Amino acid sequence: MAKQQNVFAFIDGDKKTRKEQARAVRALGLEAQRQLDESQPKKDFNAGFPKRRWSSGGQPRRHSGRGASILHDGGVKVAGHTAATAYPFCAGPNLGASGPPIGEDLYGGGLFCADPWDLYRRGIISGMAMLLFGTVGTGKSSLSKSWTTRLVQFGKKLAVASDLKGEWTEVIHRLKGKVIQIGPGLPTRLNPLEEGVRPSIDRMGNPLSDEGWAMMVRTRRLSILTTIVKILTGQDDLTPAENNALQEGVEGAIAIAERAGRMMIIPDVIEALKVAEKESPRKISDACEDLVMSLERLHTGDVGGMFDGLSTVTFESDVPAVSIDTAALRGATQTGRRVASACCGTWIEAMVTNPDGGQRLVVYEEGWDAVTSRADLERMVENWKLARDYGIFNILILHKVSDLNMAGDQGSQMAAMAKSLLADADIKVIYRQDAAALRATTEELELNDKERQMLKTLPKGTGLWRLGQKTFHVSNDLTDEEEPLFDTDQRLRASGDTGDDDAFVTVGDHRFTDWAAPGAGKDVA
Ligand SMILES: Nc1ncnc2c1ncn2[C@@H]1O[C@H](COP(=O)(O)OP(=O)(O)OP(=O)(O)O)[C@@H](O)[C@H]1O
Ligand SMILES: [Mg+2]
Image 1: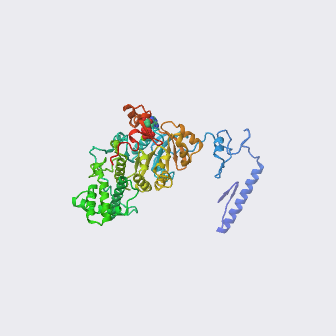
Image 2: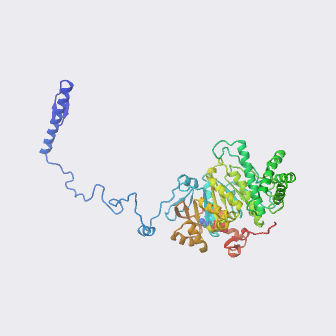
Image 3: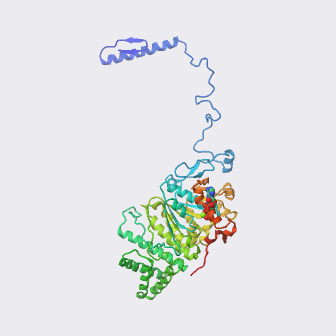
């Protein structure tokens, strides 16, 4: 039986007949419905209501966004000035909330949070390095301390390569980290020829063989010895004979250390060079003699006793933070401090450049000193390129962009290396700049007029953050606990200085705290 509007019929017969009858009944039903609809007037459901005056999208109200013209993907192209006039209070979106808070995003009004590894993962930055510029006392160290200590609480690790002022010591202690204090008369010794932490895999991701590891260690040792000799002799490069002699020295020292059943130390290299001096042809023998004289300065010079024996400290990769406090070297010569910086840097980098070591921040305080030293600059350029592989994020602190020009004359290799640091750093933070430094800063970092004006007057603890192509205006807010911990003014007050010009030394157009100025102290060379 089929049922249709107002029509009842009995259907019978074979399949074909039933189908035909059902079709006829459905047609009858539809016809009956049509006649019924025609005979009855249509009901008006809106009767009695006011007539609708807008489309089914809803009433266009002031803030509803309805009825507004839709912006299509192509957008509207206008000059920055026009856009700023048309939309005066618009700001870009903030960075989101991953990572520890640094302070307030003063454009967007929200919290400014950043985690370099997360920024890399999101494609906002592609290089794992940050440059931090600002004139004396603008809060650069405070920013690096607050950001890194907060990141440590997010599970990252921290290494301060060379803390010339000793201002990180208390911070590292607070993080339950390890401070290595190096200086004349101090008991700590670091062996720059130490093997370092052996990674489980090589750069290609294959398990690291014993031969591969031995090669890595040999290369690293040759590299630091070359660096030390270059600093001590003031040469840009070693002669072929010196290179040859140094290789013989390292080979001989490996055997000496093996016989003694301990790690290789610099006196082993000196001993091996003395042997090679007697046995080698004249040219190499002369080179050996020169190298012995240079390296012996590590025994007798102003860094004597610090890098010429077995390390008295071990690197514990589980410790959340480690710093090398070189404040005790403040009276040393510039050459002495450079050797110390190279040895400390090599030691710490041998420990942290390890893909198994987790994510680690490496801070280079007083970067102006590092970029003027060829040895430090070469190491830094190399490490920055490999930072991603090793899970490292580098922070280099400078006074101004033109500090990078101090590396060398225009067109020189040193200048090119310093410029490559600028290119590799995808996070650039600029604190207040002197009028004299503004032009170079604006040009190198491609800042607009507004940003340039801001740089003159930025208050302490606020700066411009350039992340790739994005710019943020950010304040660094310190907690009540952090403020006294990061307070470097307190030292000036405690030492009786009022923070006026007496506390500083001017070298060229640079202003340094007195003992940190290049050339401070007497040279013993
Ligand atoms: N965001 C901030 N809030 C409050 N005080 C701050 C802030 N940043 C820095 N300070 C204070 O300003 C003083 C100088 O800061 P800091 O040592 O970080 O400057 P700096 O730029 O590293 O100086 P220098 O060029 O001498 O290394 C410190 O005493 C610190 O406590
Ligand atoms: Mg500082």
